[in-house]
Length: 313
Image (tube, rainbow, N blue to C red; front, side, top):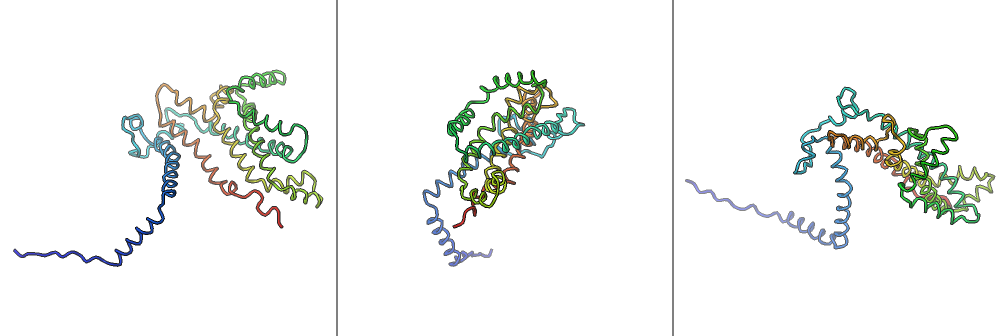
């Protein structure tokens, strides 16, 4: 039998030097502060993204995969049964989740619009006008927001019920009344945020507008509001999120299933005698995605400078 002798492949000096250069570069770049920062960011992003991934993936899992002893990180197949139960009328357990989405839209969008409009005029008055007790007023508004909603719901319900008895409207199962209760939660923080924002706008630009012949309303509409677009967008998103995700007030004021918002409907599905966690996860995914898309779509407004180019010289 012939003997075969295998000789080792000669080392390429170019590749060896390139590998050494990469190692040296990484050794100089990776320092302890950068390593700690990278570790912190990794932990932070994992803590945020993993629950969202678990919610979305669980909507495609079976009950056995969700309730098993060993966690299933990747569903075995993309099962759409949970979403069909939410939206398909032919499904035996049809939930008619579309009407709940519509109810949440009817409540959250008007709440955000009205809160931004009222907070704009109130915050501008606090930031620009001089009157006695201005700081006390602003701090008292913020102090109201510090109280939890469960403490305010009973007196608020009683007050609105008395007003409804005199005017002639029913407090229960009334979406406009629910919008009013949401304004009681969102207006204080919206006023505080916009007041601090208006204070940072240079008064010179408004004085220049008054000199050019604009009225006070014209100055607000043509100068102040365009400069405050990032603040207005931030307040609108914040108030929209409060109304979109709110559970306690909707749970108290709504009894008709046809008027349930998404949080109430998800709680109803969760408390059903037959456990369907994949349906709960599917409904939670649908409820979360619009807020994520809203942040991504309005990100450029949130990152804009407030008075960039407002004052020259």
